[in-house]
Amino acid sequence: MNKLAIAAALGAAFSASVVSAQDQGEPGVAASAPEENAVEATIFDGDFVSVGVGVAYGPSYSGSDDYTAFVLPIVQGSLGGVDINPRPAGIALDFVPDPDEGVSFSAGPMIKLNRDRVDVDDIKDEVVARYGELDTAIEVGPSVGVSFPGVLNPYDSVSVNLDAVWDINGAHSGRTISPSVTYFTPLSRGIAASLSVSANNIDDDYADYYYSVGPLNTLVPDPDALPLFQAEGGFESIGTNVLLAFDLNGDVTDGGLALIGLASYSRLLGDAKDSPFTSIRGSADQFMVAAGIGYTF
Image 1 (spheres, one colour):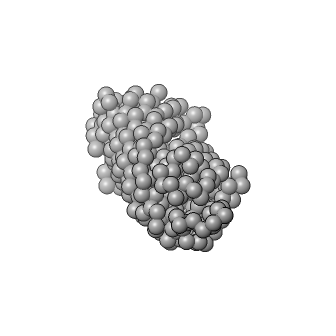
Image 2 (cartoon, rainbow, N blue to C red):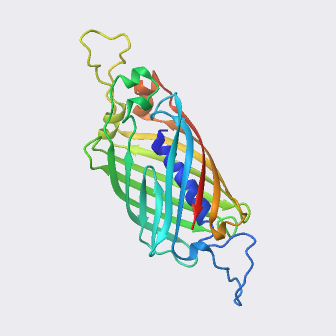
Image 3 (tube, rainbow, N blue to C red):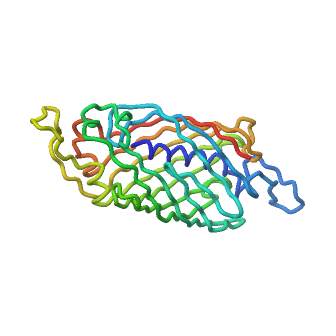
Protein backbone atom coordinates (compact mmCIF):
# COMPACT_ATOMS: atom_id res chain seq x y z
CA MET A 1 0.00 0.00 0.00
CA ASN A 2 1.43 3.40 -0.98
CA LYS A 3 0.53 6.91 0.14
CA LEU A 4 -2.24 7.09 -2.45
CA ALA A 5 -3.97 4.02 -1.08
CA ILE A 6 -3.67 5.47 2.40
CA ALA A 7 -5.23 8.69 1.22
CA ALA A 8 -8.12 6.78 -0.31
CA ALA A 9 -8.79 4.89 2.90
CA LEU A 10 -8.56 8.00 5.06
CA GLY A 11 -10.78 9.92 2.65
CA ALA A 12 -13.40 7.19 2.74
CA ALA A 13 -13.27 7.25 6.53
CA PHE A 14 -13.76 11.00 6.61
CA SER A 15 -16.70 10.78 4.20
CA ALA A 16 -18.41 8.13 6.29
CA SER A 17 -18.10 10.19 9.44
CA VAL A 18 -19.74 13.29 7.98
CA VAL A 19 -22.52 11.85 5.81
CA SER A 20 -23.96 9.15 8.06
CA ALA A 21 -27.07 11.22 8.73
CA GLN A 22 -27.60 12.47 5.18
CA ASP A 23 -30.22 9.97 4.06
CA GLN A 24 -31.20 7.95 7.08
CA GLY A 25 -31.06 10.20 10.14
CA GLU A 26 -29.17 9.03 13.22
CA PRO A 27 -29.83 6.57 16.03
CA GLY A 28 -31.68 8.32 18.78
CA VAL A 29 -32.98 11.13 16.53
CA ALA A 30 -36.50 11.89 17.67
CA ALA A 31 -39.20 12.90 15.20
CA SER A 32 -39.93 16.61 15.51
CA ALA A 33 -42.40 16.96 12.62
CA PRO A 34 -46.06 15.96 12.87
CA GLU A 35 -45.70 13.12 10.36
CA GLU A 36 -44.89 9.67 11.65
CA ASN A 37 -41.29 8.63 10.87
CA ALA A 38 -40.26 12.26 10.25
CA VAL A 39 -36.56 12.97 10.75
CA GLU A 40 -35.20 16.23 12.09
CA ALA A 41 -33.12 18.43 9.77
CA THR A 42 -29.35 17.95 9.66
CA ILE A 43 -26.46 19.98 8.30
CA PHE A 44 -26.26 17.50 5.40
CA ASP A 45 -29.73 18.28 4.03
CA GLY A 46 -28.39 21.12 1.83
CA ASP A 47 -25.00 22.41 0.77
CA PHE A 48 -22.12 21.57 3.11
CA VAL A 49 -18.35 21.31 2.98
CA SER A 50 -16.06 19.18 5.13
CA VAL A 51 -12.33 19.80 5.27
CA GLY A 52 -9.81 17.75 7.17
CA VAL A 53 -6.23 16.67 7.57
CA GLY A 54 -4.81 13.30 8.48
CA VAL A 55 -1.45 11.96 9.64
CA ALA A 56 -0.64 8.51 8.30
CA TYR A 57 2.15 6.01 8.91
CA GLY A 58 2.69 3.55 6.08
CA PRO A 59 5.08 2.15 3.44
CA SER A 60 7.32 4.65 1.67
CA TYR A 61 6.36 3.20 -1.75
CA SER A 62 4.08 0.45 -3.00
CA GLY A 63 5.81 -2.78 -1.96
CA SER A 64 8.15 -1.19 0.58
CA ASP A 65 8.87 -2.60 4.03
CA ASP A 66 10.21 0.78 5.20
CA TYR A 67 7.61 2.99 6.87
CA THR A 68 7.26 6.73 7.04
CA ALA A 69 4.84 9.36 8.38
CA PHE A 70 3.19 11.97 6.17
CA VAL A 71 0.29 14.43 6.12
CA LEU A 72 -2.78 14.12 3.90
CA PRO A 73 -5.47 16.77 3.24
CA ILE A 74 -9.13 15.78 2.69
CA VAL A 75 -12.07 17.65 1.13
CA GLN A 76 -15.66 16.39 0.90
CA GLY A 77 -19.08 17.99 0.50
CA SER A 78 -22.12 18.76 -1.59
CA LEU A 79 -22.68 22.00 -3.52
CA GLY A 80 -25.59 22.74 -5.82
CA GLY A 81 -26.68 19.10 -5.84
CA VAL A 82 -23.24 17.82 -6.87
CA ASP A 83 -21.50 15.63 -4.31
CA ILE A 84 -17.72 15.98 -3.88
CA ASN A 85 -16.06 12.81 -2.60
CA PRO A 86 -12.38 12.33 -1.68
CA ARG A 87 -10.14 10.04 -3.69
CA PRO A 88 -6.42 9.24 -3.35
CA ALA A 89 -4.78 12.63 -3.97
CA GLY A 90 -7.91 13.77 -5.83
CA ILE A 91 -11.69 14.01 -5.93
CA ALA A 92 -14.70 12.33 -7.55
CA LEU A 93 -17.92 14.15 -8.44
CA ASP A 94 -21.39 12.58 -8.19
CA PHE A 95 -24.06 14.10 -10.42
CA VAL A 96 -26.85 11.63 -9.53
CA PRO A 97 -29.34 13.03 -6.97
CA ASP A 98 -30.02 10.76 -4.00
CA PRO A 99 -33.62 9.74 -3.31
CA ASP A 100 -35.23 10.52 0.03
CA GLU A 101 -35.16 6.81 0.84
CA GLY A 102 -34.15 3.49 -0.67
CA VAL A 103 -31.30 2.53 -2.97
CA SER A 104 -29.13 5.38 -4.24
CA PHE A 105 -26.73 5.55 -7.18
CA SER A 106 -23.64 7.63 -7.89
CA ALA A 107 -21.87 8.48 -11.14
CA GLY A 108 -19.46 11.15 -12.27
CA PRO A 109 -15.87 11.96 -13.23
CA MET A 110 -12.84 11.70 -11.00
CA ILE A 111 -9.27 12.98 -11.12
CA LYS A 112 -6.27 12.17 -8.96
CA LEU A 113 -2.49 12.33 -8.86
CA ASN A 114 -0.27 9.26 -8.54
CA ARG A 115 3.09 10.26 -7.04
CA ASP A 116 4.41 6.83 -6.08
CA ARG A 117 8.27 6.95 -6.12
CA VAL A 118 8.22 10.47 -7.56
CA ASP A 119 10.72 11.81 -4.99
CA VAL A 120 13.74 9.62 -4.16
CA ASP A 121 14.07 11.50 -0.86
CA ASP A 122 10.84 9.79 0.24
CA ILE A 123 12.20 6.30 -0.57
CA LYS A 124 14.01 4.94 2.48
CA ASP A 125 15.47 1.94 0.64
CA GLU A 126 18.76 3.14 -0.87
CA VAL A 127 18.83 0.40 -3.53
CA VAL A 128 15.33 1.17 -4.80
CA ALA A 129 16.13 4.89 -4.74
CA ARG A 130 19.06 4.26 -7.09
CA TYR A 131 16.61 3.18 -9.80
CA GLY A 132 15.54 6.79 -10.05
CA GLU A 133 12.50 8.98 -9.75
CA LEU A 134 9.25 8.36 -11.60
CA ASP A 135 6.96 10.99 -13.08
CA THR A 136 3.66 12.15 -11.60
CA ALA A 137 0.68 10.46 -13.23
CA ILE A 138 -2.54 12.45 -13.69
CA GLU A 139 -5.30 9.86 -13.66
CA VAL A 140 -8.85 10.60 -14.84
CA GLY A 141 -11.93 8.48 -15.48
CA PRO A 142 -15.42 7.58 -14.29
CA SER A 143 -16.58 6.60 -10.81
CA VAL A 144 -19.87 4.74 -10.30
CA GLY A 145 -21.55 3.19 -7.29
CA VAL A 146 -24.69 1.97 -5.58
CA SER A 147 -25.65 2.13 -1.90
CA PHE A 148 -28.17 -0.06 -0.07
CA PRO A 149 -29.44 1.47 3.21
CA GLY A 150 -31.01 -0.29 6.17
CA VAL A 151 -29.31 -3.66 5.75
CA LEU A 152 -28.96 -4.77 9.39
CA ASN A 153 -30.43 -1.73 11.14
CA PRO A 154 -32.30 1.41 10.04
CA TYR A 155 -29.12 3.49 9.87
CA ASP A 156 -26.48 1.30 8.24
CA SER A 157 -25.60 0.83 4.57
CA VAL A 158 -23.64 -1.33 2.15
CA SER A 159 -21.99 0.55 -0.72
CA VAL A 160 -20.41 -0.90 -3.86
CA ASN A 161 -18.13 1.36 -5.90
CA LEU A 162 -16.04 1.05 -9.05
CA ASP A 163 -13.38 3.55 -10.14
CA ALA A 164 -11.59 3.31 -13.50
CA VAL A 165 -8.85 5.80 -14.41
CA TRP A 166 -6.28 6.36 -17.17
CA ASP A 167 -3.05 8.35 -16.99
CA ILE A 168 -3.19 11.42 -19.26
CA ASN A 169 0.21 12.84 -18.31
CA GLY A 170 2.43 10.31 -20.07
CA ALA A 171 3.84 8.80 -16.86
CA HIS A 172 2.70 5.17 -16.73
CA SER A 173 0.18 5.79 -19.57
CA GLY A 174 -1.86 2.90 -18.21
CA ARG A 175 -5.17 2.06 -16.57
CA THR A 176 -6.35 0.99 -13.12
CA ILE A 177 -9.74 -0.41 -12.09
CA SER A 178 -10.59 -0.33 -8.38
CA PRO A 179 -13.73 -2.07 -7.01
CA SER A 180 -14.67 -1.73 -3.35
CA VAL A 181 -17.40 -2.77 -0.91
CA THR A 182 -18.02 -0.82 2.31
CA TYR A 183 -20.29 -1.59 5.25
CA PHE A 184 -21.03 1.50 7.34
CA THR A 185 -22.99 1.78 10.57
CA PRO A 186 -23.33 4.41 13.29
CA LEU A 187 -22.72 3.02 16.76
CA SER A 188 -24.41 6.00 18.44
CA ARG A 189 -25.42 9.53 17.51
CA GLY A 190 -21.78 10.62 17.66
CA ILE A 191 -19.77 7.47 16.81
CA ALA A 192 -19.58 5.68 13.45
CA ALA A 193 -17.68 2.67 12.12
CA SER A 194 -17.07 1.05 8.77
CA LEU A 195 -15.37 -1.97 7.24
CA SER A 196 -14.17 -1.86 3.62
CA VAL A 197 -12.75 -4.46 1.25
CA SER A 198 -11.13 -3.29 -1.99
CA ALA A 199 -8.96 -4.48 -4.86
CA ASN A 200 -6.90 -2.90 -7.60
CA ASN A 201 -6.45 -4.19 -11.16
CA ILE A 202 -3.73 -2.74 -13.39
CA ASP A 203 -2.83 -3.09 -17.06
CA ASP A 204 0.55 -3.95 -18.57
CA ASP A 205 1.65 -0.31 -18.95
CA TYR A 206 1.00 0.45 -15.28
CA ALA A 207 2.70 -2.75 -14.11
CA ASP A 208 5.74 -2.14 -16.32
CA TYR A 209 6.18 1.43 -15.07
CA TYR A 210 6.02 0.71 -11.34
CA TYR A 211 7.17 -2.91 -10.98
CA SER A 212 9.52 -3.79 -13.86
CA VAL A 213 13.24 -3.69 -13.04
CA GLY A 214 15.73 -2.61 -15.68
CA PRO A 215 19.53 -2.36 -15.56
CA LEU A 216 21.19 0.25 -13.40
CA ASN A 217 22.89 2.95 -15.44
CA THR A 218 26.46 2.17 -14.31
CA LEU A 219 29.71 1.60 -16.23
CA VAL A 220 30.70 -1.44 -14.17
CA PRO A 221 28.60 -4.25 -12.65
CA ASP A 222 26.93 -3.13 -9.44
CA PRO A 223 26.69 -5.70 -6.61
CA ASP A 224 23.49 -4.06 -5.38
CA ALA A 225 21.73 -4.32 -8.74
CA LEU A 226 18.43 -6.18 -8.63
CA PRO A 227 17.56 -9.00 -11.06
CA LEU A 228 15.94 -7.83 -14.29
CA PHE A 229 12.17 -8.24 -14.18
CA GLN A 230 9.38 -7.60 -16.68
CA ALA A 231 6.05 -6.97 -14.93
CA GLU A 232 2.67 -7.62 -16.52
CA GLY A 233 -0.80 -6.47 -15.56
CA GLY A 234 -3.42 -8.19 -13.44
CA PHE A 235 -4.64 -7.77 -9.89
CA GLU A 236 -2.15 -5.58 -8.07
CA SER A 237 -3.57 -5.85 -4.55
CA ILE A 238 -6.47 -6.69 -2.28
CA GLY A 239 -7.02 -5.14 1.11
CA THR A 240 -9.28 -4.14 3.94
CA ASN A 241 -9.57 -1.23 6.35
CA VAL A 242 -11.48 -0.53 9.55
CA LEU A 243 -12.34 2.95 10.80
CA LEU A 244 -13.89 4.64 13.80
CA ALA A 245 -15.16 8.23 13.65
CA PHE A 246 -15.99 10.33 16.73
CA ASP A 247 -17.93 13.61 16.61
CA LEU A 248 -16.44 15.84 19.30
CA ASN A 249 -19.76 17.24 20.51
CA GLY A 250 -21.50 13.87 20.33
CA ASP A 251 -23.83 14.78 17.45
CA VAL A 252 -22.72 14.14 13.88
CA THR A 253 -25.88 15.74 12.47
CA ASP A 254 -24.88 19.32 13.34
CA GLY A 255 -21.40 19.35 11.76
CA GLY A 256 -18.41 20.72 13.61
CA LEU A 257 -15.28 18.81 14.55
CA ALA A 258 -14.81 15.04 14.24
CA LEU A 259 -11.89 12.69 14.88
CA ILE A 260 -11.11 9.64 12.75
CA GLY A 261 -8.94 6.59 13.38
CA LEU A 262 -8.10 4.08 10.66
CA ALA A 263 -6.18 0.81 10.39
CA SER A 264 -5.54 -0.94 7.09
CA TYR A 265 -3.88 -4.00 5.61
CA SER A 266 -3.32 -4.91 1.96
CA ARG A 267 -1.54 -7.74 0.18
CA LEU A 268 0.24 -7.24 -3.13
CA LEU A 269 -0.54 -9.86 -5.76
CA GLY A 270 0.85 -11.11 -9.05
CA ASP A 271 3.82 -9.28 -10.53
CA ALA A 272 3.45 -6.48 -7.99
CA LYS A 273 4.35 -9.11 -5.37
CA ASP A 274 7.00 -10.86 -7.50
CA SER A 275 8.85 -7.68 -8.50
CA PRO A 276 12.32 -7.47 -6.90
CA PHE A 277 11.28 -4.05 -5.56
CA THR A 278 8.84 -6.01 -3.39
CA SER A 279 10.13 -9.58 -3.08
CA ILE A 280 13.80 -8.69 -2.43
CA ARG A 281 13.82 -5.12 -1.10
CA GLY A 282 10.33 -4.89 0.39
CA SER A 283 7.28 -6.92 1.40
CA ALA A 284 3.96 -7.91 -0.13
CA ASP A 285 2.28 -7.24 3.22
CA GLN A 286 1.41 -3.57 3.56
CA PHE A 287 0.19 -2.14 6.87
CA MET A 288 -1.00 1.35 7.73
CA VAL A 289 -2.48 3.37 10.59
CA ALA A 290 -3.83 6.89 10.34
CA ALA A 291 -5.62 9.53 12.39
CA GLY A 292 -7.38 12.65 11.18
CA ILE A 293 -9.50 15.60 12.22
CA GLY A 294 -12.18 17.27 10.14
CA TYR A 295 -14.62 20.15 10.34
CA THR A 296 -18.02 20.28 8.64
CA PHE A 297 -19.80 23.57 7.96
